[in-house]
Image: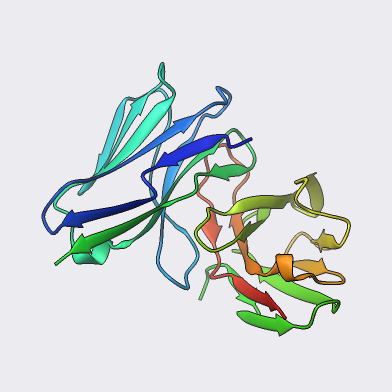
Length: 110
Length: 114
Protein backbone atom coordinates (compact mmCIF):
# COMPACT_ATOMS: atom_id res chain seq x y z
CA UNK A 1 0.00 0.00 0.00
CA UNK A 2 1.55 3.25 -1.15
CA UNK A 3 1.00 5.79 1.59
CA UNK A 4 2.45 8.80 -0.23
CA UNK A 5 1.58 9.36 -3.87
CA UNK A 6 3.70 11.78 -5.90
CA UNK A 7 3.23 13.30 -9.33
CA UNK A 8 4.43 13.89 -11.93
CA UNK A 9 7.13 11.25 -12.41
CA UNK A 10 9.15 13.65 -14.52
CA UNK A 11 9.01 17.35 -15.23
CA UNK A 12 10.74 19.64 -17.69
CA UNK A 13 10.68 23.37 -16.99
CA UNK A 14 12.29 26.30 -18.72
CA UNK A 15 14.89 28.28 -16.78
CA UNK A 16 13.11 30.98 -14.79
CA UNK A 17 9.82 29.09 -14.74
CA UNK A 18 7.89 27.60 -11.83
CA UNK A 19 8.27 23.90 -11.05
CA UNK A 20 5.34 22.31 -9.23
CA UNK A 21 5.35 18.82 -7.72
CA UNK A 22 2.31 17.37 -5.99
CA UNK A 23 1.87 14.77 -3.28
CA UNK A 24 -1.05 13.14 -1.48
CA UNK A 25 -1.04 11.08 1.68
CA UNK A 26 -3.45 8.68 3.31
CA UNK A 27 -2.50 8.32 6.94
CA UNK A 28 -3.85 11.16 9.09
CA UNK A 29 -1.33 10.24 11.79
CA UNK A 30 1.45 11.82 9.72
CA UNK A 31 2.54 15.07 11.36
CA UNK A 32 5.65 16.12 9.47
CA UNK A 33 6.07 16.50 5.72
CA UNK A 34 9.60 16.96 4.39
CA UNK A 35 10.79 17.33 0.83
CA UNK A 36 14.12 15.81 -0.14
CA UNK A 37 16.39 16.62 -3.07
CA UNK A 38 18.65 13.95 -4.50
CA UNK A 39 21.45 14.31 -7.03
CA UNK A 40 22.85 11.28 -8.89
CA UNK A 41 25.16 9.22 -6.72
CA UNK A 42 24.20 11.10 -3.55
CA UNK A 43 21.86 10.41 -0.70
CA UNK A 44 18.67 12.46 -0.30
CA UNK A 45 19.10 15.83 1.41
CA UNK A 46 16.36 17.72 3.25
CA UNK A 47 15.19 20.72 1.26
CA UNK A 48 12.23 22.10 3.20
CA UNK A 49 9.59 20.69 5.55
CA UNK A 50 6.19 21.62 6.95
CA UNK A 51 3.86 20.61 9.77
CA UNK A 52 0.11 20.33 9.20
CA UNK A 53 -0.72 23.28 11.45
CA UNK A 54 0.37 25.73 8.73
CA UNK A 55 -0.82 26.03 5.15
CA UNK A 56 2.32 27.40 3.58
CA UNK A 57 6.04 27.60 4.24
CA UNK A 58 8.53 29.51 2.14
CA UNK A 59 12.31 29.31 2.15
CA UNK A 60 13.98 31.30 -0.59
CA UNK A 61 12.73 30.06 -3.94
CA UNK A 62 11.09 26.98 -2.41
CA UNK A 63 7.52 26.96 -1.09
CA UNK A 64 5.41 24.15 0.36
CA UNK A 65 1.64 24.50 0.14
CA UNK A 66 -0.31 22.22 2.48
CA UNK A 67 -4.01 21.32 2.34
CA UNK A 68 -4.84 19.30 5.44
CA UNK A 69 -8.49 18.61 4.56
CA UNK A 70 -7.53 17.25 1.13
CA UNK A 71 -4.47 15.48 2.51
CA UNK A 72 -2.35 17.03 -0.21
CA UNK A 73 0.81 19.10 -0.32
CA UNK A 74 2.97 20.51 -3.05
CA UNK A 75 6.40 21.95 -3.68
CA UNK A 76 6.79 25.07 -5.77
CA UNK A 77 10.21 26.08 -7.06
CA UNK A 78 10.17 29.66 -8.25
CA UNK A 79 12.64 31.01 -10.82
CA UNK A 80 13.83 27.46 -11.53
CA UNK A 81 17.54 27.16 -12.35
CA UNK A 82 19.55 24.46 -14.13
CA UNK A 83 21.18 23.66 -10.78
CA UNK A 84 17.75 22.62 -9.49
CA UNK A 85 17.79 19.66 -11.88
CA UNK A 86 17.55 16.68 -9.56
CA UNK A 87 15.09 14.12 -8.25
CA UNK A 88 12.68 15.41 -5.62
CA UNK A 89 10.92 13.23 -3.08
CA UNK A 90 8.03 14.20 -0.89
CA UNK A 91 7.76 12.32 2.35
CA UNK A 92 5.56 11.94 5.38
CA UNK A 93 6.51 11.07 8.93
CA UNK A 94 4.39 10.08 11.91
CA UNK A 95 6.80 9.94 14.80
CA UNK A 96 9.09 7.21 13.60
CA UNK A 97 9.87 6.13 10.07
CA UNK A 98 9.76 8.39 7.03
CA UNK A 99 7.62 7.24 4.11
CA UNK A 100 8.76 8.52 0.72
CA UNK A 101 6.94 9.14 -2.53
CA UNK A 102 8.34 7.61 -5.70
CA UNK A 103 10.07 10.80 -6.77
CA UNK A 104 9.93 13.40 -9.52
CA UNK A 105 12.83 13.79 -11.88
CA UNK A 106 13.07 17.52 -12.60
CA UNK A 107 15.01 18.90 -15.54
CA UNK A 108 15.46 22.62 -15.98
CA UNK A 109 16.23 23.68 -19.51
CA UNK A 110 18.96 26.34 -19.74
CA UNK B 1 33.46 15.18 8.04
CA UNK B 2 30.66 14.98 10.60
CA UNK B 3 27.95 13.63 8.30
CA UNK B 4 26.60 10.10 7.97
CA UNK B 5 29.27 7.80 6.58
CA UNK B 6 28.59 4.55 4.74
CA UNK B 7 31.07 1.90 3.67
CA UNK B 8 31.71 0.55 1.19
CA UNK B 9 30.33 2.91 -1.45
CA UNK B 10 30.09 0.13 -3.99
CA UNK B 11 29.92 -3.63 -3.66
CA UNK B 12 29.77 -6.23 -6.40
CA UNK B 13 29.12 -9.76 -5.25
CA UNK B 14 28.19 -13.10 -6.73
CA UNK B 15 24.77 -14.53 -6.12
CA UNK B 16 24.73 -16.59 -2.97
CA UNK B 17 27.49 -14.70 -1.18
CA UNK B 18 27.01 -12.77 2.06
CA UNK B 19 27.65 -9.05 2.25
CA UNK B 20 27.88 -6.59 5.14
CA UNK B 21 27.52 -2.83 5.01
CA UNK B 22 28.48 -0.36 7.70
CA UNK B 23 26.91 2.96 8.68
CA UNK B 24 28.45 5.52 11.01
CA UNK B 25 25.74 8.03 11.99
CA UNK B 26 26.16 11.58 13.24
CA UNK B 27 27.52 11.03 16.73
CA UNK B 28 24.81 12.85 18.71
CA UNK B 29 21.94 11.13 16.89
CA UNK B 30 20.22 8.30 18.72
CA UNK B 31 17.99 7.18 15.85
CA UNK B 32 19.37 5.28 12.86
CA UNK B 33 17.46 4.15 9.77
CA UNK B 34 18.18 1.79 6.90
CA UNK B 35 16.44 2.29 3.56
CA UNK B 36 16.70 0.58 0.19
CA UNK B 37 16.39 2.48 -3.08
CA UNK B 38 16.07 0.93 -6.51
CA UNK B 39 16.45 2.83 -9.76
CA UNK B 40 13.66 5.31 -10.33
CA UNK B 41 12.03 4.69 -6.98
CA UNK B 42 11.89 6.44 -3.65
CA UNK B 43 13.73 5.06 -0.63
CA UNK B 44 11.88 2.16 0.99
CA UNK B 45 12.03 1.77 4.74
CA UNK B 46 13.81 -1.36 5.99
CA UNK B 47 14.40 -0.91 9.70
CA UNK B 48 15.31 1.59 12.39
CA UNK B 49 17.07 1.73 15.73
CA UNK B 50 16.57 3.88 18.77
CA UNK B 51 20.02 3.70 20.37
CA UNK B 52 20.85 -0.02 20.29
CA UNK B 53 17.24 -1.23 20.17
CA UNK B 54 15.80 -2.27 16.81
CA UNK B 55 12.26 -0.91 17.05
CA UNK B 56 10.72 -1.79 13.70
CA UNK B 57 11.43 -3.99 10.72
CA UNK B 58 9.70 -3.77 7.37
CA UNK B 59 8.15 -6.79 5.69
CA UNK B 60 10.72 -6.07 2.97
CA UNK B 61 13.38 -7.26 5.39
CA UNK B 62 13.39 -11.00 4.74
CA UNK B 63 15.10 -13.53 6.99
CA UNK B 64 18.24 -13.12 4.89
CA UNK B 65 18.61 -9.55 6.14
CA UNK B 66 19.85 -8.66 9.58
CA UNK B 67 20.83 -5.36 11.10
CA UNK B 68 22.61 -4.55 14.32
CA UNK B 69 23.61 -1.50 16.27
CA UNK B 70 25.50 -3.10 19.14
CA UNK B 71 26.58 -0.06 21.14
CA UNK B 72 24.09 2.45 19.88
CA UNK B 73 26.67 4.01 17.59
CA UNK B 74 27.54 2.46 14.21
CA UNK B 75 25.27 -0.06 12.54
CA UNK B 76 25.77 -2.97 10.18
CA UNK B 77 23.37 -4.44 7.65
CA UNK B 78 24.10 -7.98 6.53
CA UNK B 79 22.50 -9.76 3.60
CA UNK B 80 22.98 -13.51 3.49
CA UNK B 81 22.75 -15.64 0.35
CA UNK B 82 22.38 -12.60 -1.88
CA UNK B 83 19.98 -12.69 -4.82
CA UNK B 84 19.92 -10.57 -7.96
CA UNK B 85 16.82 -8.84 -6.63
CA UNK B 86 18.90 -7.50 -3.75
CA UNK B 87 20.75 -5.21 -6.16
CA UNK B 88 19.96 -1.67 -5.00
CA UNK B 89 21.30 1.35 -3.18
CA UNK B 90 21.25 0.85 0.57
CA UNK B 91 20.89 4.14 2.42
CA UNK B 92 21.50 4.88 6.06
CA UNK B 93 20.13 7.93 7.85
CA UNK B 94 20.32 9.26 11.38
CA UNK B 95 18.39 11.78 13.42
CA UNK B 96 17.46 12.84 16.90
CA UNK B 97 14.42 10.99 18.20
CA UNK B 98 12.25 14.10 18.49
CA UNK B 99 9.20 14.06 16.27
CA UNK B 100 9.94 15.75 12.97
CA UNK B 101 13.68 15.87 13.55
CA UNK B 102 15.63 16.15 10.30
CA UNK B 103 17.03 12.88 9.04
CA UNK B 104 20.48 13.11 7.49
CA UNK B 105 21.31 10.53 4.84
CA UNK B 106 24.61 9.01 3.90
CA UNK B 107 25.68 8.60 0.30
CA UNK B 108 24.64 4.98 0.28
CA UNK B 109 26.17 1.65 -0.63
CA UNK B 110 25.38 0.48 -4.13
CA UNK B 111 25.09 -3.29 -4.22
CA UNK B 112 25.26 -5.21 -7.48
CA UNK B 113 24.61 -8.95 -7.35
CA UNK B 114 25.85 -10.79 -10.44
